[in-house]
Image: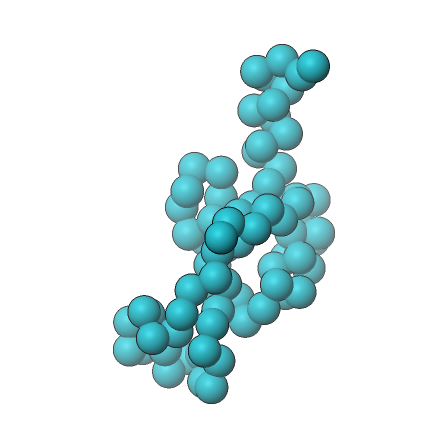
Length: 74
């Protein structure tokens, strides 16, 4: 069993990925999404959105480059 401190440290190495319908985005962001119907919002452990990416593979690459793990939120 892990301590609260160990769990908090582990959570700090995660980013959360949430699918977002492009129709729910502001007009200027929707234009950048082109023909995509869904993009993925990347959130830090405090719930702040830090990026929008085109697909889960890009999010995984982003996470790997920063020594983090991706967790999907549905």
